[in-house]
Image 1 (spheres, rainbow, N blue to C red):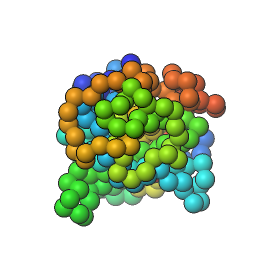
Image 2 (tube, one colour):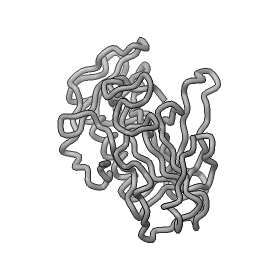
Image 3 (cartoon, rainbow, N blue to C red):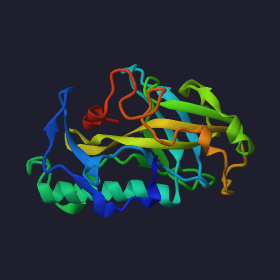
Image 4 (cartoon, one colour):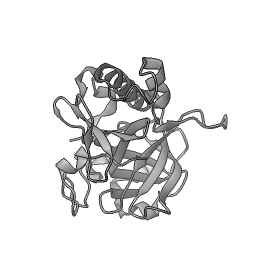
Length: 242
C-alpha cells in the first residue's frame, strides 16, 4: 500500500554521503526513506486530489521524457519542500559541491536548487505547481467519470489527461537528487494516477471507491515496483534531470 505523504517523517529521510555517476554521464545522490528506496508515496490522501495545471507533455528534444504539473498545497507542498530542505542540508554537510563553483554556504546552496515547485503568477491559483515525470510505459492511469463514480474508474493512459482534471498520484523519487553543473534538484515519477474527469475545483469531501485504484504503486500496468518493461526498483537509483 502507498503511504500518504502527510505520514512521512522527515527524520526518516536520508541521503547518500556523496554523488555517484549515473548511466547518462551525470551524477546523482540516492535518497531513501527508512533505509529503502522512496517508492509508493501517495501525494495526497483519500480526501485530497490535485488539479492538473499542465497536462502530460513530451519533451521535444528527448522524446522518451514526459512530464506533467499538478497543483499542490497543504501537506503535499510541505512534503516536497521538506525533502528539498533536507537535500540542501545534506549538500552543505557532505560537501556535494566544489568550492570553485560557489561558496558552499547554506544560503548559496539553497539558491542553486532547481525546485520541482513553481509559484503561479495568477492569484486564482494560490497553490504552487509540482512537476513530475510520467513516462507512458511506467505510469498506470485509472480514469473515473466523476467524484461520485470512482468505482467506475477504467484504465486509461497519460494521453487522456487534460488540464483541469483532478488527480491522486502515487509517486517515487527517481533515486534522489540529480546534478547539472552547479544546479541540483529532485526528480519524481508518477507510478500510478487516479484521475477524475469532472468535479468542482477544490473539493475536499471524503472520497470512496478507491479500491479501483492500485494504491500499491509501482507502475508498469500491473502494479509493484519493477513491473514495467525495463524498469526495476534499482532503476530508481538514477534520477532523471528536469
